[in-house]
Structures are given as C-alpha cells and as structure tokens.
Image 1 (cartoon, rainbow, N blue to C red):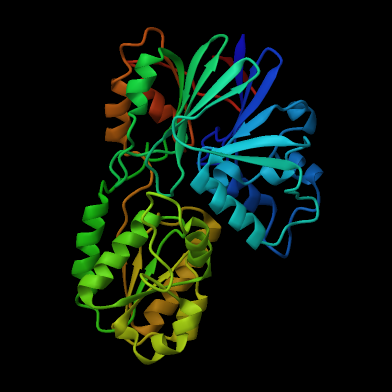
Image 2: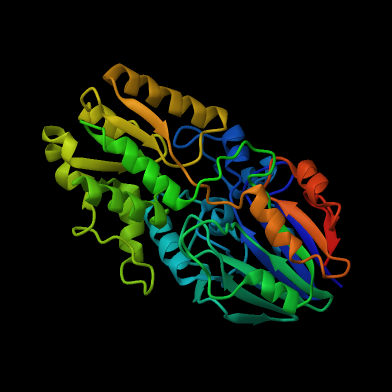
Amino acid sequence: MARLTFYGGVGGVIGGNQILLEDGSTKVLLDYGLNYSLWRSYFEYIFAEPRSVEELVMVGLIPEPEVLKGLDACFITHPHGDHYGMITVLPEEGVPVYMGEASHRIIDARLKARRKRRFERLDHLTFKPVHSGRRIHVGSVTVEFQAVDHSIPGSYALIVETSSGNLLYLGDFRTHGVFKPRTDVFELALDRDVKTVVCEGTNIGQLCSPLSERNVEDAMTRILSECRGLAIVDMSPGDVDRLRTVCRVASNLGRAVAVTKRHVTVLEALEGVEGLATPSLGKDVLKYEDVEEELRRNPSEYILCTSFYNLREVKALTPPPGSVYVLSSSEPFEEETFIAFRRLQNWLNLLGAEAYHIHSSGHAYPWELRKCLSRLRGLDGLKVLPVHTEHPETFKKIFARFFDVVIPVKGVSYDV
C-alpha cells in the first residue's frame, strides 16, 4: 500500500512543501522546501542563523534523519525556495534530484551564488534535469513531469503511478498566465484515473484581484506614461513573464530597463534555454551596476527592476519627486516582510514618490481551482488533499460537495 506523509506545506502554511511517498520499499520525496515563516520564527539571516541540522530538526523545519533513511529520489516541481530550499541538507549520499531543465539552471545558479552554511552540501546530490512528459521509474513508483504555468520557468505538476493507484501533485500552478502547456494535466489525470490529488490553495480565503498579465501591462503602461522621474518595478527575480511585460512597457514608453543582481543571476542561468524567450542581458535589459550613474543623471529614461522591497537602490539613487514605485509581486503578509515594506514606503514618501500595486498572481485564483477540479468530478472516490494554503478549512467547505477533501496533518500518513 502506497502512502503519503506530509512534513511541510500543511497546517495553514503557504509553502515549505515536503511530501514523502512510500510504496513498499520505495521511498521518494515530492519537493523538499523551506518554510520561510517557520524559519523566521527561530532564525535571522547572518545574525542568528542555524548552526546545525539538529537545530533544523528541533524547530520542525525538516523531519528526523531516520525518516529519510534509504531515500531513493527527490522530485522538485519548480525553482522557488519554498519547494526546494532544504535539498542541501538531504541526509543520503548520491540521491538523484529530478527537476526541469530551467529549474536546474536557476537552482544551481542560486545555490552557488549564495553563502552556504557549514552543514549544507551540494556534492552529495546528483541533479537530473528533465523535460515535460519524461517518465522516471524508481522502484515501484513512476513519476511523470508535466509542465504547468506558474510565475517562474521550469514549473511542473507530477503524475505519480503507485501500486495503490495514481496520484496528481499539482505543485504551484495557474491557468490565467501567459504560458499554455501543450498537455492538459487535468485531461491527463482523467485519462490516468487518478485516485488522489494534492492541490495548492494559496489564494483560497484571500482577497484576490484576478488580473491577467495583459491587465498588468495595461495598468503599468497607464501609470508609468505619466511618470516624469524614475520608474521602479519591484518584482520576483524569477518571474520572466513579468520581466517581458516590463520590457514591452519600457519599449512603448521609450525607456530602457535595468535589473539588479538577483535578476541578473536568473537571466544568466536561463541564457540559451530553448523556447523561453528570456530577455537578453545587454540587449533587452541592462545591469544596474553598469548604468547606476546614468540612472542618477537621467532617471526619466529608465525602469529599474528591484526585488524583495530592497532599499539599497532607492537610497543610493534618491529618485526625484514624481518618481513611481510599482510593487509587482504579492503584498507582504508576515511581520518581518511587512516591516521591511513599511520602511521602504517611508523612504518613498520622504522622496516624494508615488506607489502602486499592480500584480497578477502566480497561483490559481479560487475560480480557477473550482473550474479545474470540477473537471475531475467523474473520477469515483477521488480524494483531494489541500496544501500550501492558510485556509485549508475554507478549501474543504468549497470542495467537499464534490470530493472527499482530507486536510493533511504534519507527520500523519495517508493512503494513496
């Protein structure tokens, strides 16, 4: 009998997905992410970082090492840290870690660029890049990667065949974005007669503004066309769709685009990946460090892309009154990030800059979840387990009319 045990991504938490699938003697991980909220509750970057794997276990960021003893493989759905961030402390030697090619490039670049703690390792892992449709056989389990749309390239859902039946793990996904996968993963799930769906519910219970990428482009163009100073767009470094949008807006308004270091890391990693149409460094976008003085002299000729409410560039450039700041990512919802954002807002107010929030979510809106999951109503006895949501009870109330919705509990096992 195959079973799932959830060690992260549950309990009213967005992210930190860690799902252990056991089928007989076969043992695989579906994502091994970092729970940022829990991490911040006990640690602080640089000043109070974890000193050992034992500390990570103690605070509940990872399971006891014995849990993963004999692990056969790890499958990563996409390159966001809340889905891959703990792979550097996987206990087994030579564990194959499967992920999309774009995911591999981004994760590899990020892990090499950041400072590693003394107990973190990479040399014990074997990265295995794959493409959509690839089927990986591990013991009694077969895992199939199927591309989905999300706010970063290299995002996949996983269809897992076990001795007890088939499982669909959706990772993070949306249908309102730019990318349209060749294969409809929900149609495939019907064809494969899946018994269990592990589904994200990030936007369940949230106040949503259901914008599309085109809506973002139109709003950004409208606002920035009236800007007479520097335009700053604060966005996720991995959101290539959003960067393409910014490039189109800049082209229409006669501005150049400059990007900061985190964006450069991703763009360099994705250079040459077929079919991505990633903006090119030096051609479509410029490195901030190369044009910093020009930005200071002629701010009205640029859009500067920053990330994570970073104050450094704002303070360094002191943009003139009438400049515009656009938050083009999710609003801060944790105390620490909220404080950082308020600090940034204080500086923007001091400098006389306008501020706007223009964003299209990287996650399915509730109406999308309802539309997608309703297509699976023909599957008898389908079990749905919500993860990656602050409101699992709300998820259950919405979908319990159609499916057996089981709210997973950390450390508890569930039959597939």
